[in-house]
Image (tube, rainbow, N blue to C red; front, side):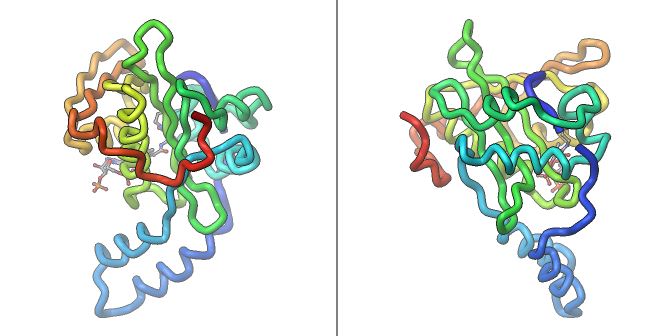
Amino acid sequence: MHHLAMATQSTAKPARLTAETAHESTPSLDANRARRLSRDTIQLRCLTPADGHHVTDLLGRLSQQSRYQRYFRLIRTLAPADVARFVALSPDHLAVGAFDGNLLIGAAQYFRLSGRPEHAEVALEVADSHHRRGVGARLVRELARLAAAEGITHFTATVLAENRPVLELMRHSGWHIATTPDGTYSDVVVTLPPELVGAGAGCACASRAS
Ligand SMILES: CC(C)(COP(=O)(O)OP(=O)(O)OC[C@H]1O[C@@H](n2cnc3c(N)ncnc32)[C@H](O)[C@@H]1OP(=O)(O)O)[C@@H](O)C(=O)NCCC(=O)NCCS
């Protein structure tokens, strides 16, 4: 959870949000339906080393608060080595990205723990413009399916104890969650459900290194 970092808020909304606004203005379409339609425009895929510039851009789409919640400090840029680490492909690391058109608007990744290979540390972030649209939950589910296929049974994370959004997101997953408060932080352990193992990869990861 301590690995990576990102910048300030985005001003321009992605093009697809224009369509969403049109849906919301349709009297016969309630807010929930419009929200589901907006989710349908988001595509998930595994990130590869060619996606480094998307990762750099995503940092710029996080508010200061989101950056702090994600990286525990107000970083402005990601070092090239951190970007490379973010998009690296290996049996011990994978990042899934959520794209709205050509814009990376969210990412989740895991790093397998060297001493406990069935456990992996996870981190995720979603651009503030796209919060509360189900993107974070989709990313975690997709990452979990891919991790389970690699023999990972547990996700771990250290989060700010005050980070209600991510704690609620984990609880909302329906999976078994153990949370241990540790002052400013909380340690979270998620037990991935057995049915995920063998479910197969669910996103376009054809370019993933074997
Ligand atoms: C945490 C984060 C990834 C959630 O992403 P998101 O796409 O907004 O989350 P979702 O829309 O998928 O929310 C799924 C569920 O999580 C819970 N949740 C999410 N945001 C919440 C909030 N602000 N308050 C309360 N519950 C929240 C809800 O139960 C929600 O379901 P609902 O919308 O049907 O009620 C996002 O807030 C973020 O990027 N935060 C900054 C980075 C960070 O904190 N990362 C975690 C540490 S690595």
